[in-house]
Image (tube, rainbow, N blue to C red; front, side):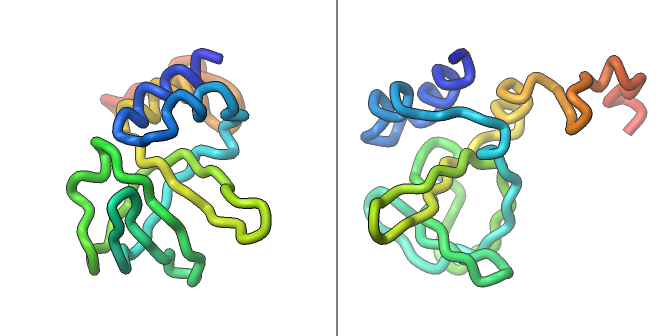
Length: 123
């Protein structure tokens, strides 16, 4: 539930903030690192394609201010499927610090970096 509140705070510029916090089914599987090319823009979303040809909508928020059309971007995002008949994948960009706060420094093995003996100074 803490992650839902954190994600809700990150989506401040989204008009669905209240709804998102209530209905979001949070899991780390929905957090992704993605590289895509912005192909279009509307008032609430950017349209984008990744290099495998998948289409996405990227919600505009504080972390997407530097995005512009025909620009290649790599970022962490929360992924959500929207639509009943025509499914759309909507990405909500996260900053690196927000991403680390959400996952709690846990890797694929479920251990913290400290438990694995890794310090960020060593990298």
